Image 1 (tube, rainbow, N blue to C red):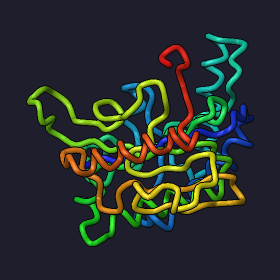
Image 2 (image 1 turned 180 degrees about the vertical axis):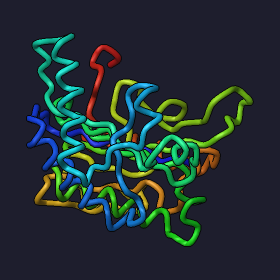
Image 3 (image 1 turned 180 degrees about the horizontal axis):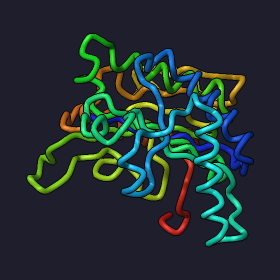
Amino acid sequence: MNTRFHFIIKRHPLTEDEGYEWLSSLLTTIHPFLPTVHWYLSPSTQEESKRPFPQVVDRTNFLAWIKRRHAETLREWPEYPFGFSALLTSASDERAFEVEEGRCSLIFEPGHGRIQLEIIDPDIAWPQSDVTKMMKGILGAVVNDESVEFAAVDTSKWPRKDGEKGADTYSIDFRTFPHRRFLGWMGFVPKVIEPADLTQADEVIPILSRRGSIVVAVSDQFDVHNPLHIEQAQRVEMRLVDLDALPVIDPSFQ
């Protein structure tokens, strides 16, 4: 089972130094839930992949790489408006990248208004951990510390049940509405909801300070091959529409 967090945030084009400070703060926020994970800048070329990957904690070296890449972008697109961005991995080098279980990646693009965290096979990497508790902890920590406008937790599983190549993925194969955001396993919606108003979900946590709510559709470890999990997540999404809490992303589909 792979898990992917999608955080939609207010767009903030940042300088390299501003972006590094925000990124470091984000990694500190999620560290208690991924205590054995260390972060590195992902290579962007084959040549870079043959070297040890730059560590995020080495500010001077990390920012030198980021600034070099940003300069290359500006040469091709002088009016590039999005500022600092980074793609991180928990693998320290090419050999470590080959180990999938527990490998994490983080897309940090404040200029585009998004943060995405993927964790591969957390249930296999940390068999003694309560995976649901871990994921809920990450979600809650980021929502409370960042300017999150919406969040969803997607899951995927290999192999596909229909025998085709690839994985079954909730957001692609099972989401309830193609023109709206999906919630998936759990997420954050931009409306304060009382648990009594969303009984389809296993847990609802209103957060008044964020003018929204964390919604856990399924309290068990989510399995896209479990039809009961899919059905419950879809019922939650349908009820969120009734509550005007599942934003439209493509009005042309309405």
